[in-house]
Length: 270
Ligand SMILES: Cc1cc2nc3c(=O)[nH]c(=O)nc-3n(C[C@H](O)[C@H](O)[C@H](O)COP(=O)(O)OP(=O)(O)OC[C@H]3O[C@@H](n4cnc5c(N)ncnc54)[C@H](O)[C@@H]3O)c2cc1C
Image 1 (cartoon, helix red, strand yellow):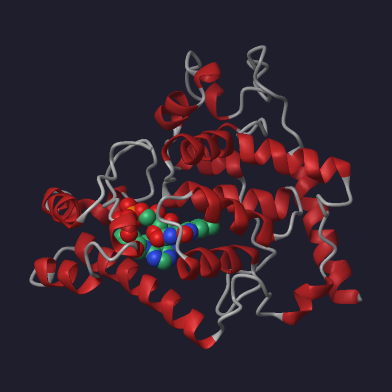
Image 2: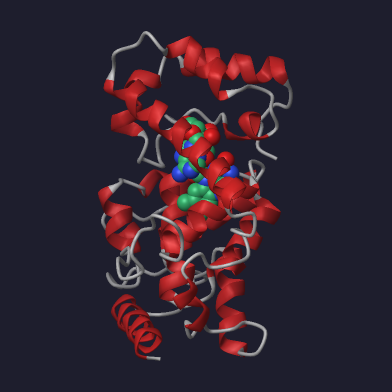
């Protein structure tokens, strides 16, 4: 486990005190995985080592955009807890029942899907930002929020694997694994939940990687790519710079997108 999470109430309060210097910049920096400018309070919150109310009292008189956005994230956490109270099976059942008919590729019966799930879990998909995120998760027990969104979307939409497989993997590997936050975020990404993102909004991992300046993050977690400059590091295969030992993309982006939209149409027509 990475040493960022020191267990206990004292450590939680030290982390909160350190966070005070950065909270005002949260709005600008929270989406940049290469920069360590999020609070990393999630495991402390999950295990009750600190409460959202304690955090709120510390910062409530601030007037910055950063604090306003951060406060909103704490409220998302409470929203997730509330969703679970209303729908206790949210981690295992689609809220939108239409998705019970979705033609997922099933790793239990389809060898290619099982291989793809394994490549995703191990961070060997050929998409550097996805691989960096999945390796950060495995090595540290934590993953940056922007990259959680990218990797989750990739499993569901590029690989067409049921969000519940991803929910289970995150549940097993995150040090902040939280029944409510995990389930609501997976259903949100899949488009299967209450107040969800639409399934048809498919994230392009390679442009996300450039947009959110992930080069340094990729270099940290995917050492095979550490010597690549920008823009090659975001998509080495496309630029003909893929080092030996780093995998080809397990599915091309455009093909994956078309396959996902066709699956959505098949569900709607059935
Ligand atoms: C697919 C997926 C799975 C996730 N699984 C979990 C999980 O199991 N446990 C978990 O705590 N968070 C989960 N999240 C939400 C979010 O990624 C983490 O809370 C955040 O990255 C933790 O880092 P931080 O403490 O530095 O967050 P900060 O950005 O500093 O946010 C502060 C706090 O707000 C809360 N928060 C922030 N974003 C969210 C959100 N989207 N939903 C609910 N609460 C939020 C967390 O308690 C967090 O500690 C998941 C997100 C996605 C996309």
